[in-house]
Image 1: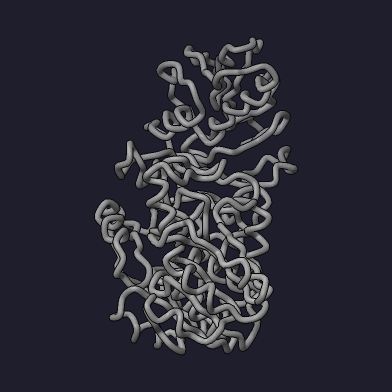
Image 2: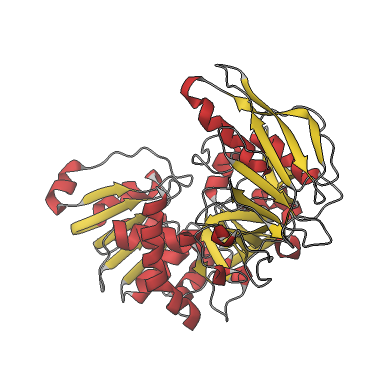
Length: 474
């Protein structure tokens, strides 16, 4: 067995007549079948030079002990000073690949995405990733068939942003890392942030796909990473993500999942996460909304606005919903609003405890005159209403009001974990019981994303706009 210099990573191939499974293992870990070591694919990294690629050759040993050299070099990426040892990690993308029967990687590649893509295009093999305690590495048995595993390596189809246009493209199948899961998506929501990202105005946070939009999804867990309970496999879930939701499969931090109640359709769940997590965080956690208070909510016809109306109703609030579209009054009253008004009527409402601002200056200019003592103004959107407003500071002083703003996408993983835990505790049971719901405006096929974005862009719709994923991401 050869040892990888510097990185200490090994790959094991199980031939098709044994199991067709690729295992992620560390140095000294061995997989034995009838006391015979199965094929290893080993990366032997040569000396790292400043500003030069990390190069290496690969040597493999088949099931019968025959060795061969894969003749082409692997390029892990450019190295810069102290970054060199870290860039070696780019080669880890080879871990799920089985190279049996291959004699070359057919050329040099320059980054880990390309490496993974080449691997995903490989023909003549089937591979699965399994998370297994390799402490029993000296066992002469294969692991139990019931242990968690992912479906065969494949490409995913995703909506991608290319020079401002939307294109359906193939990408490597994501592989869950520690404390992550892979979800086969059935539905993905469209949000205002997706339109901004398409225009280059709202990039995804670090670590998330830069050109695959989508911040919410619903589907089934099909693979779990290290440290994740395997009982999640097959569960129906919804979640928010930093990007990448508008694809057949997506990675999600395990602690960010919300399990969908059995009586809720996954289509409804596809529009739940972003709307209700955002609304609950803004209204309750940022706005400190208390039972029985008065809410003035703008943009009430949208996903977040309609969610806020329902959350406030759960708290026995008096809800004044503001919409630009008179035909939406009946729907908002049905969701629990006590009164529904248009912008022209804002100055006539009773003083309110919380203003949830989703429109921007056009509404807040009027709403700031309707603040009760100790009122809280929470700004979470400026949907066409303008981002600049003149504030009457004397009124702020007189009412001792506070103004805050919030975004959810860019927050840390731990912050989101705390918010989502609160949402699970407060909203999943009312969702199951029918006390809250997701109003759906229209659902489009993933291949019709361009039409879906065009439908979403102008005002006048009520509820969420979704993309339907073919075959549940399979």
